[in-house]
Length: 355
Image 1 (cartoon, rainbow, N blue to C red):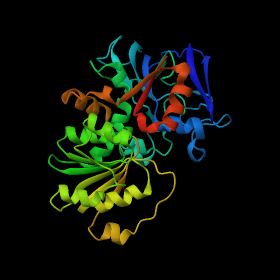
Image 2 (cartoon, one colour):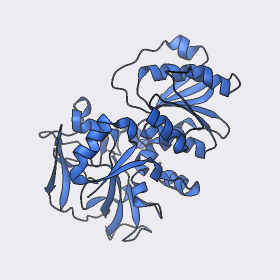
Image 3 (spheres, helix red, strand yellow):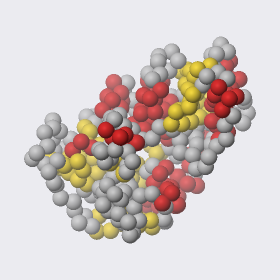
Image 4 (spheres, rainbow, N blue to C red):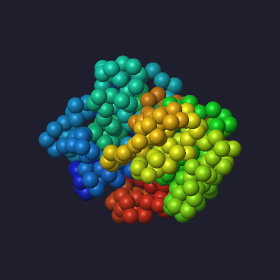
């Protein structure tokens, strides 16, 4: 079969590889679309983070695979075969998505149910276990979730939707609250979409004109503020009768954004850091947290979020197509995918790829 193989920094190759075999406890899927994640762009241009993941010489401790590996982890597709020992209501031809996280099941985080915080966490399509940029993939049945009549192009958005869902679930928002979201990139827009679906008023902070427009067009925000032209905290206080926001979400990964979000919070409000920060930031803990009894949390990936995320999409009739800014073929992934997301990121939300 054909598959896009990731060899390392700036090296992906469309090759003929052996077709994976159905094994006990697994489901075989024909991928339809695979979304390009920001982490994919990073892997392509910069390689693995902090030496983590696979290398040509050292296999990942969970997958046992060395580079190259089949690429792509935001996967939608159709069921091709189900192992005899898998007890499920799913059937051949059903539309499904793949949960990409692979955990050890043995460390304290896994035993507590927080498998996204696994000591050895791996990713399907990143560290092995197959990948969406292939003609077939075989994955453990517990990683496969039916999506019903959600179109498969939109279903490729469910993986990042689950990331946003997990961050929001951890903050337990309530209808009628106000949240401020820093950054109108893919995850920021999805955070805004979910919050509004839950009855939370969303004020989004964004510099890019194109992304500001997308936030309003997609109904991901009630109000969009350009912090280079307007004081974010002052605007938030104006919109909340002087109180400040109940919650804040950093989806930008830039230090100035965190300071602005903390200032925009009400007393006892909380900031969830969803974005990946490339370097440490400096906080005045007493001034920015102690006075006002504010708090900061972090999040990583998702755990047990896919069923609820899929149900929310159905229940609120959320149209994810508005976030798809291009559809490309796998052979064009470098020029029309990675390069576009690096050089013209403000005009793209999600680029999805088909074989």
